[in-house]
Amino acid sequence: MIFDMPFIVDISERSPLVAQAGSLVVSRFFGKSVLEIPCISNPNDVLKDLEQKEQLNHLIGDAAMLHESGISWLEALAGWKIPVILMVTPLSTGSIPGLASAYVSLCKMLSVQLIGIIQLGGNWDARQRKLDCLPWCGYLPDRLLINNLDIDKLDLEDVLFLEDITCKLKYKISSLKL
Image (cartoon, rainbow, N blue to C red; front, side, top):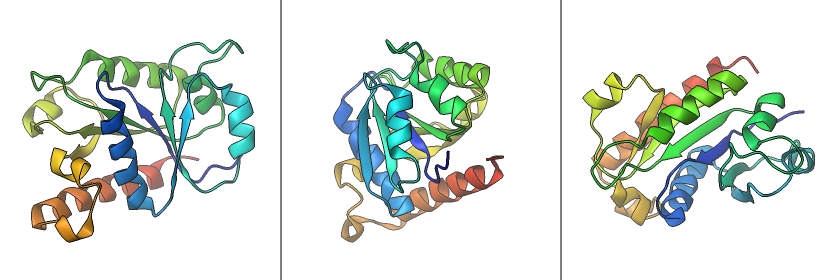
């Protein structure tokens, strides 16, 4: 059971296009392609097929929902010891939905190797992110998601956002006991 790449779990209640753009940006950090996997698929069957393939996997759907096989995707990821990155978009009010806290708690309960959370779009409130005590890796501004990380359109601030997230992801991945 060897997985070098983490799974992205989208916990947003908004547009799946934003999550797809977010996974594309994260995949470019790692220099890998993205494979979208619907959560209605049998987790263990899919994981057996994906073993030792080097791509970033993006789960589409509710990863906490029990599959008809008797296991949820989060349970399967925990069992296979596959690291997970959660992605969340803020509500229209700018607040982070309660799903972020709920998923972090569920990941802890199931012993999922959680790398952290990336906020997709909206405004980044660093003070509020520290107060909510969630394992944030950073924030991808709307302009990066819209431009799909077009290198020609990056300014210094964009590069700094990407470097910050990249460093946090690499550090957290290296500190996991895989």
